[in-house]
Image 1 (cartoon, one colour):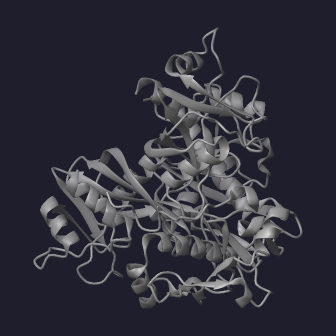
Image 2 (image 1 turned 135 degrees about the vertical axis):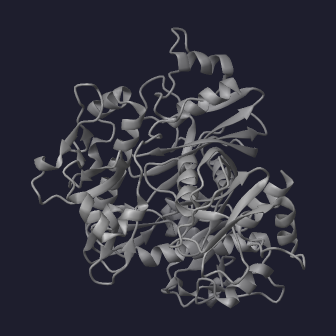
Length: 289
Length: 289
């Protein structure tokens, strides 16, 4: 199976350096340091179609730097920008993602998740006071109560129900016409992955399921940092009862239909999600299973 | 495999009701409503050794109620208490957890996760203003900027490295003497489950791993709401280089040794984690695999 999108970063996250003020200071002063180039929140592309990096000399000096990691001994940073994640699915971004080498997409995804998290946590949830970045950008600390805050990642289950060699796919009204994907939803406190998978399929499509098989996972850096957990669930039947507040349509597709969709065949029944989305990997896994 | 601890809640989470003010109002006014009885944050036990529930008549009337879910048409709530999660691993709690039926432990875990989350998010991380509970207790909304906040669950990877039929277990200095468990750590933004598993084993024990197999998952309601994701990773070798800031010791154990530990045998090499911890389920899976 092809590695899922946003995985395979070549950077060593160097957790050991984050709490070591001296070692971190040396990295910030390293003239070989590379700073990720962004346009707002979108990646700036190099002439070769990869990420573009600045040298540390190009900084103004007032930037707050987040340590993305080390590669060949060189520290890699991104500067915190104050920006809303409005550009979620901007055409520029979507085009960049289809061009970027996998390793670069993974680095960009990490940077983007961290920037969004910092901007949403400039104040302490416990006491309302201002927080400051610490741990090389991998945390924020409250000036008043001292509470330490760490980057948030929300687990999301994304899954195919399976019944007699057919899989259940659905579409939200905001999808482009003809596009279908795996059903998905946030995992809630107090439930396991398997319980969340069964609950979401039942809520959205009224399909009850039993056994759940984990397939693969992917970090997803848009609309907050998410961990997409892809599974296949065995359905007890194929009757669908839609929750139209969640999805606009759902249908059972055969492996041939899914193969045609993934291949973009002319006579395809539906359009599959793009290759960097885990739903693509999940469908790919299912048709070859 | 035995169902992992804190799973198997019999309550229907009734997501559809959370946004429906009218339906929610009817539930709050329902004389059959049951309110989870707590002592601080600890569960109060019934005479039969299960959770104790109050009737709605026993409330003062000023409580903020979180809808845990429905069972036999009866709404089940917990009242938000202002309390710090200090009692993490209080002897009372640990004893209760070893007595509670699985279904009751799952309900308590959900309630505990939500209460801790509300108390840590009384202010908006984006603007610092006061937030108010909404969505039947499954969210908070900022009075000033209107940002909606939803319960947080942190994914944690917990895993055994495996090499030549031995598994790697470790202990933190805060563990009782002789106790060993699976290694574990928080998944970070920008990595998949598989990447987090490999990174954590390498950081803590210096053991490089390849393929990662997902085994099982569990919600864990202490120290914030966590999703424990249990895996087995194939190690490339058995040399250990400890990071002593993370763990005090690590060792390779055979399946016989793990079996003895799980059974509490007299001559056991180490003490296994308690049955309600996913590390217990993971070891159990590994010895029978």
